[in-house]
Each structure stands twice: as C-alpha cells, then as structure tokens.
Image 1 (cartoon, helix red, strand yellow):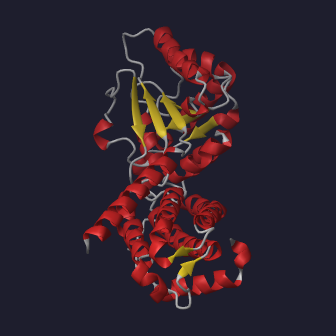
Image 2 (spheres, one colour; image 1 turned 180 degrees about the vertical axis):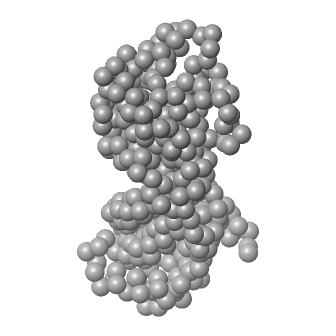
Image 3 (tube, one colour; image 1 turned 180 degrees about the horizontal axis):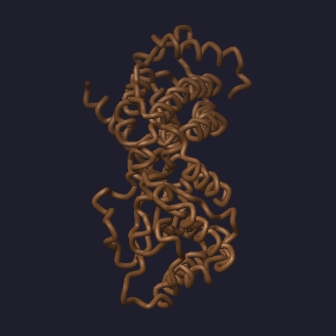
Length: 382
C-alpha cells in the first residue's frame, strides 16, 4: 500500500468515526429509575429484563450496593442504549420520609430539566412478593409517586411468593396506596427465567409491554434494543429501519450529485469517498453496530469502497463509465452503495439480536453490480 493510500484510508477512518459518533450521540436514550427497599430484588429485576447492564458482582443478598444512586448504561453487546438509575434502598435506622423525599426530589429535578432526554422516562418500583406486605417506606414513596404516569410497580420474586402474599400486596397497593391495578406487574428472577428454557415469562413480558406503552415515542426503539427477552420485538424493530436507511442513502446521493454537478474526472473520484464513508457510518449507527461488528463488517467495507473509487479501479469496475463522473452517475453510484450496504447491516443486527455470530464482510461484486444495474434502470431512485 502506498503512502497516499495509507493517508487516504486514515482520513476515511477519521471521517467514519466522526460521523458514527455524531449519529450515535443523536440516539434517544430512555432513563429508567428503579426504586425499592434493600433486598427488594431491584438488581435481579434489571438482570432479567436488561441482561448484564448490572454487573453480577453488584448484586448482593440483602446488601446495599449504592450510596444514593448508581448509574448503569447498556453495554456494548446491546442493540439499544439506555440509562438506569438504581436508587438507594431503605435500611434500618434511616428515616423513611427523608429518603423518600430525596428520591422524589431527584425525579422532580430531572423533570424540570429543559432537555427531555434528561427526564426520568420510567420508574420501576420493586416490592418482593415474599412477606406479603408493603413496607412503611414504600407507602411514603407512593404518597408522592402514585400520580406519576411513568410509574410501574413490579412485584419481584413472585415465583416464591404465595398466592395469599401476592393478593395481600395487590390489595394494599390498590386500596391503600392508590396504584392502578394495570400498573402492577408480577415478575420473576433471571435465574427462574433461565430455568424456563426459553419459554415466555408472562410477568416480565408484561413489564416490557407496559414500559413501551408509557415511554415517549422517541425512546421506544432504544428500549426495545436493550431488553433481552422479546427477540421478536427486536427483529421487527430492526426490519422497520429500512425507511430510515433509504432516507440516509438518498440524502447521501443528493450530496454526491452536488459534488459532481460539474462532471469530475475519474482521477478525482476520491472526492466522493467522504460522502460514501459518511453514509456507511450513518447506516452502521442506525443499525446499532458496535465494537466487533464495526471491525468485521464496517471497516472492511470502508476499505473496499476506497479501492473501488480509486482512479485506477473505477473504470475497471464500471466499464463504459467514461473518463468523467457526472452528477447523475455520482448519485447513482452512491444510491447503489447504500442499497447494497443496508441489507448487510440489517442482517448483522438481526444476527446479534438473535444471538448468532455476526458474519464478516465479504464484498460480492456480482451482487453489487446487480444493484448497480437496477439503479441505473430506475434513475428516479436518486
């Protein structure tokens, strides 16, 4: 590889990373606050719904793991980005009112933020089924929280609570705390879920569906990508990105048309690479590709694009192109590249969502050429 090629690849990688980071930063990430007394099963609930967002070492048997709040983010293996605020659990010797007031003050402070991305979008309140009662601290909290539309009460460890205990808690929540019955969900621990060998858990599924009902529209996609139980929802969400993908490549095609509004020599084809690179980065961000997916899929693709658009390769790949690239041809090439790339990114996202290994990138020029020929015959796609 020549020094010029190395410099070009370095610039393209820099362009990719800049665009990818900018697009990823636009993701609307929901903020979930999880509350409950110490030992209520908050961390286990998070593990059951969101996987390893909470490190296993942070889960203690009745041992408080936070001072006031612990902030967790979806990890690199997640297709979605969200933030969880794990609130401090009530402990003996503390005053119920003071801790409750501090937690409510935190929610109200977030709600006053001018940026809605910093609001608390969901509140999961955990109460353990064993014991069959709502604690005084919980009652203090519900005096403040019961009217909050984003509140869901999760009765945790329901697999080891008796029917009588669960009925008693439900009655107390509805009649004594003013919690609507449709906001009460019985959930099980992650260990129980794993023992069910893939069978659906009605309670945890209900928590996911209810959370989606309460979340503002802009934050639903990230939540679907982050939760680990409903794979079908993930797949449907991924397939639903096709319209956004088309908007990305059409915008990029329009940019390419502008660059070559005055036909440019094939030798100047690298001028188009920045547009192609930004498009690929935007598509990678759209499909939630991270870490290893970028290294095995996006980066090799980027190198191939650089090779195709090199002056010595362009006419070889596209016989009859001539010595000049017009705006129309530039737009068509960019459209073809977008139409060729997005199904591969979609496939990778689905593989990741379903727990399959993500295929590495192999540039099938015959497949790309078929797309190119299709695009040429339908210029109105640009």
